Length: 250
Ligand code: BV8
Ligand code: ZN
Image (cartoon, rainbow, N blue to C red):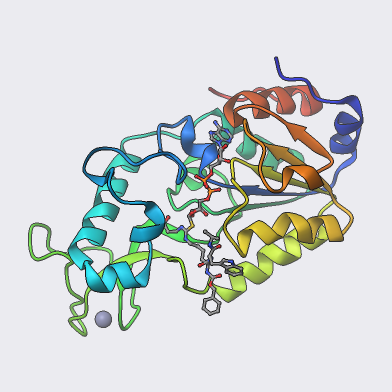
């Protein structure tokens, strides 16, 4: 049973500016394994942090390319869940709403969210590893990774790997949305990966009420005003109904 403290209900009712940060946990109920989940099948022996790096791509380009191709196939076969749909509804209730995601699965966009800041890029966008141009199609079944038609360097997923800078303008927009909001939700993230994990603290410094939604405690939990312990797909629909009397499609 999800219990929303009444002071939080009042705060949300009055809120005009809400910012949300999501992590892999919000896609868990769609069947997308989180980064913390043990990898399965032929990827079981690798940790995501080992594969999602420029060094891994340089050393094992085919392995890293195939890992992303496997993830694209997995995500293409799943659907946004009630948590993604609840955030689409939330965006409609609040005059100033910003959704920041660490996820690269594109499920927020597929659910219909408008203003999504994809801090770490997106699985379904591919670019040249040298001249950076976007490439939307390549000859399948050829060599892997495929090569750029312009400069013949390997193609790579347009995601931010560990050790790579986040897109500066996106990060600045996210920092501004965190600093200026009245309520900041941190949903389904282990709060371990920086600089995204700094955003709730930016919100706290800006005087926001910070709310964490996660079945488990995280390094952020001791600092937030409210912890709603539970699965996002269960908690968010209850929240939308309780505060805005809004029904969320399952
Ligand atoms: C950078 C794309 C530096 C690729 C990803 C301080 C400052 C700056 C950098 C660092 C720093 N300290 C350390 C660093 C380095 C590093 C870092 O943070 N390392 C960590 C591991 C310590 N950061 C970086 O490298 C970043 N780069 O800052 O560059 C720099 C500076 C100058 C010059 C050059 C460079 C880049 C980070 C981005 C990496 N790319 N993804 C890909 O996906 O393949 S990160 C990737 O892992 C995901 O995108 C995601 O962000 C992260 C996993 O985190 P979560 O989303 O939180 O997922 P996780 O599985 O961990 O947790 C799931 C949670 O959900 C759990 O809490 C669970 O309880 C909960 N949950 C489960 N089920 C549910 C649920 N919650 C709700 N409902 C449920 N049903
Ligand atoms: Zn190129």
